[in-house]
Length: 423
Image (cartoon, rainbow, N blue to C red; front, side):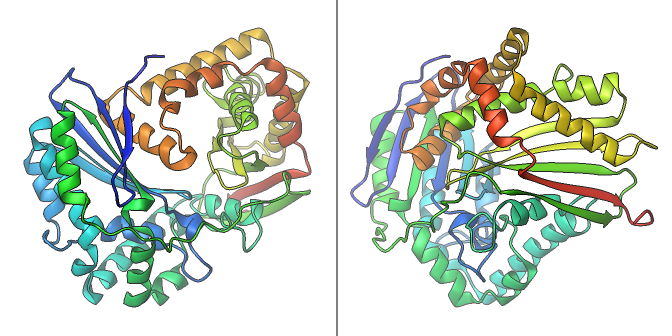
């Protein structure tokens, strides 16, 4: 694993600034993580973090609607944002001579977004988000599976019970005052990590960050997220058959899992790689090649930090194959990992993980995101340099133990999607 030098300091207002130089190309990445996601949303206010992913591009104190995109793209740059259960991030990449522009744009909406939010803007972006929900969830084949998985793995009242998209009812009920209050609470410098990676001068970057972000007041009333403490297993099997506009039957299997950032999560990650990553995985070899039950298979952990995570696997039945047969074979494979994995399987899993982790820090933009992630979620940006070693140190016995503790019948949710006419 390559080693990346970085500095980690704070402005007086609490903004965490991580700087890492890379002069290989005249490019710079600016990455801003806010410590707010759907986990932080109270009941009745779901979808707010994701709504702000859209509102943050609708203009601020000195930037007109749509101008953020226009300015960055005119400078030869790219930009976007994402929302997850534990965070929201905004990122820009551009030729390094435009670093000051990127910092000014991000600072203007951190300190002046409320000047650009009107009832018209809220109504417009609310409709955009609702339409996104229709396209990705409500009207897409198998589209509601992830939402149903959240509901089943975590009980009502748990911060992970709802996904980031939120509910239609909560989005409809959101008032301008509600939205402004949410922004004032969470979009403060002392609740953010700003990372700059690429070809820049440190002293110059520091001066610009101080100039544009230094005057933004901190918020000392940021409430911690609600507790995610929960039993390590569900305690029963939860089943649901979902009639949907689909042609092929498909099974989604979810498990309550150890939280991201724990040694147990790392061992579970390796178990999921052995189970479902690529043509050499157990699920593919067994369900797709040998028994020819499934058209495709997959298995992945969802990295939540608040008390517990989710491990999810899928299998799409071949035409004419009963989905019950596919499910039975799936469980057989997953529980078989608890009996142990071979040296060859562990070596293959380590190779796949190493490739993935190296790809995650390959570009300045990827590296900036990784620094921000580890600083925000674990207060340790240095994990950029040590995360891979931790994963590769997981031993076969740990993988089997993780499989035994997670993949049991008393800790799984089974969602079976079937064609509506079959139902």
